[in-house]
Image (cartoon, rainbow, N blue to C red; front, side, top):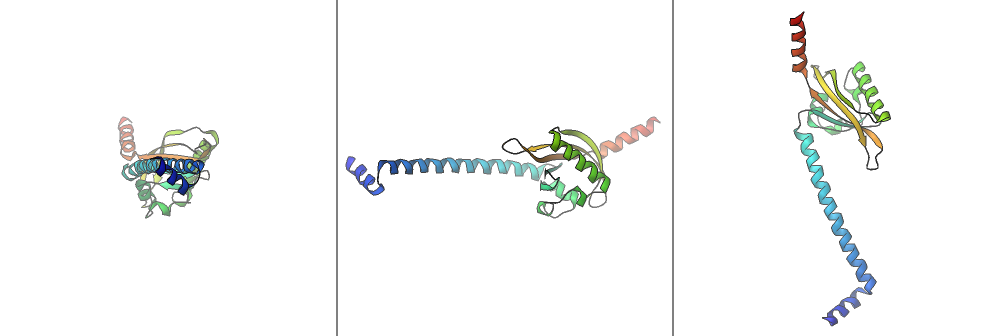
Length: 171
C-alpha cells in the first residue's frame, strides 16, 4: 500500500499538492451543494410566482419593475415578465395612481417601513376598473441594504362592491 501511495505522490508532486487537490475537491463539492440549494429555492419562488392569483412584483430603487408574476403580467397587459422589466407604473396606469404608487414606494425605500393593506382603485390594461389591497415592503440585499421594494396586490373588487351596496342600503 505504501508503494502505491508513493507512486501517487510522485505523480501528483508534494504532499502540499495533494492537500491542495483535496481542498479543491471539497470546495467543488460545497459549491455544487450550494448550487443545488439555490436551484431548490429558485424553484420554490418560481412556483409561488406562477401559481398565486395575487399580483406579485419586485422593483428597484427607481420603482422600475425587475420581476413580476403571471398575475401581474395579465394585469399590465404584457406578453411576459421581461416586457415589464425596466418599466414603471407610469407606463401602465393612469397618472394619479402611478404618482401615488411611486410616492409610496419611495417612502418605503427611504424609511424602511412597509405599507400594509392599502385599498387602491386601478385600471387594468384592458380598461377594466378593479380594487386591490396592496402591501409593499422594502427589498433588501444580502448585506441588508434596501435595493427596492416588493409588493403584493390582491383583487378586492367584489368586497368593495359589497361594501358600497351595504352603505347604499343603509342610507
